[in-house]
Image (cartoon, rainbow, N blue to C red):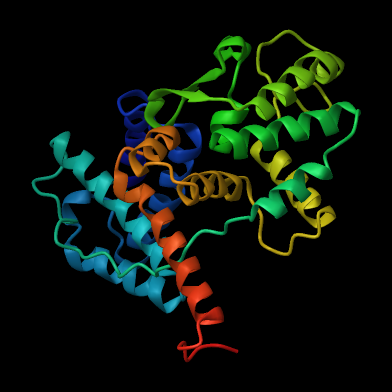
Length: 300
């Protein structure tokens, strides 16, 4: 029964909540682990038999496996959403996930590239081959406009308003926002559309960024490309597509942009999500103080 309800929950996330397939896949993976634990250890298939203690035991098992607090929090968030759904559909009498506390999150700051490292990354994409032109255009948009990789890879020709300097983005939960493109981004995008995309395009369709077979470029495909480019640029940091988004936000704030403007550009619903970038700036200030001030006791 739990497995069947899990499929109904997936349908709810897709149709009612309008979540992306990647988000739904993440929910499914976490909840399948939870459901399997309850079936295997307690032979529970009826959700009305579940208690807070069953959820807590699942969390204890995750801790024994040395699962990070951030991963446990994500899994518990999925469990809470699932039990809330069961209650809303009157499939259970109460939401037993209420009152199960989240573990303390580790205070980890996202990786950010320096402007010098961004320039090095763009330098290794300089070239006139279709894939080089494509890669430069992607990096310019991820860094220059702060797009999520899923937003960028889902872009269609009708989303572009290059002459007006902006793009229509469909973000998380299908929420739309308008994102400006800088001059460098416009130039790279125009070059890709005129000189590279026609060579990659092998079938009808309006998806902008394509792979060598003419299909839509995948997240995994570009992740591998970016890893290779970072290595060529001699960047030792762990660079992912989201690193470019982090760098976009951080560099804006470093140069005086208002936090609420950055929140709007990133498409964050809650400003507390955006505030992590102010912590990055504070950490940089602290590091510089420790390194250079004569009264600091932490100088090397």
